[in-house]
Amino acid sequence: MTAANRAVTAASFGTVLEWYDFFLYGTAAALVFPAVFFPGDDPLTGILLSFAVYATGFLARPVGGLVTAWLGDRYGRRAPLTATILVMGIATACIGLLPSYAMVGALAPTLLVALRLVQGAATGGEFGGAVLLALEHAPAEKRGFRGGLLSSAVYAGLILGNLAFMLLVAALDPQSLIDWGWRVPFLFSLVLVGVGVYLRRRVGETPEFERLRQRGGASRYPIAEVLRQPRNVIAVFLVRVGQNTTFYVIAVFCLGYAKSVLELPSWVTLTALLVGAAVAVVLCPLWGALGQRVGAAPLVIGGLVGLGLLAVPLFLALGTGVAALIIGVVVLAIGVLNSAADGVQPSWFASLFDTRVRYTGLTIGREAGAIVGGGLAPLAAAALVGWAGHWWPVAVLMIVGAVVGVIGARLARVPQADQPSEPNGLNGPDRANRLREPAVSRATWFRSTA
Image (cartoon, rainbow, N blue to C red; front, side, top):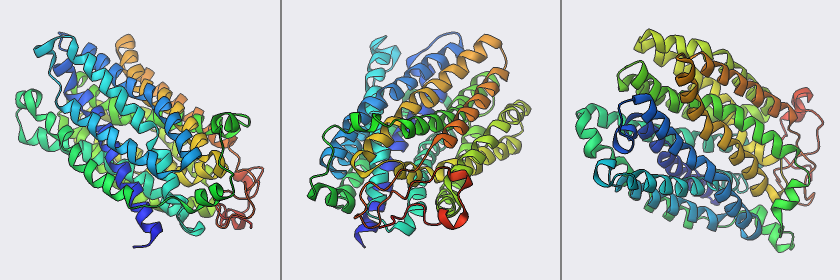
């Protein structure tokens, strides 16, 4: 196996594990944790509290991301990534060992919050580093496709997390699921950690960073340096706010809403997410390759506009209770539209920043956007339903999120190559507006003009 293939394999598997752990909590927060850690008479209150803890993981992501990104831009990409996967796996397994509220009272949700913060800190540094580990090893002409593989890995983590609970829901009665069954997939994370650490330790440092380090060009203060020209940081932030808002309302909030408010069987929404994510796994690399040829911004904008238009039909479909209709709408939303916006982002976002500050710039924008769009969106959606007694404010929230993401996509600009002597660098020449760029230029988007 070539160094480039080892890199993309290690990056992808680690990303699968990180997001298996992260999405596992989201599924449990909707289906199990209200009863285990937040018992009460009002199911909506339990969901609200469970999603509040879910949001704490997103609050920790920028902090963990900044620390990891600083290390990655200062000393190299590989070592921080090995640390993130180890910390994430241990924190997830510890959640599986927590006592319930019935056993220790308020200490149980307190410990859950602490471990969720550790999960979030580890996740914050994962995706940006995994993208760079894969793409800075890859040939220029394959970076769109290989970046899409990293997005596929996120959906694969979603599949594993939801599949674990889907199997448990099918195999166990509701009480056994709450008593002990939910712990099994959290403890299984330890097995995946061992494989992930082994794979990442076999990958060397990326060629681009090695060349930069040999020239003495590594940045000592990457945060300050990247914030001197914040346009692309803001663009990434807005895109992620918009996409995360629409995605997490569907993938997390709708699980709890369908089960506790609409009283739909858990298997309906779990199946919908599972099939939608499976379609996204297949399509993300194809979207990534297409984005390298025709431009990423049009695909991101098209996906976000489609998600905004689908907000009302999504809740109408949930209201019917018809499983086939619900699954079809969710598959269209996550499997097609969201994957179109997602598949092009790894290579696109990486191309927006110079090698010296690439890890930091990508991470700041992406993880700050995760707080607003990912952590707060399910919590806000639950609060809006409680306030209005109806789903329509949540649909408005999704539409507003899509608009914000479109603004971010139009704001982004690919900078001048940071080092003209770097072969196959991620940065291309300065282009004033990707949306108006001719197709022949877009085909060489991620190639250096050296």
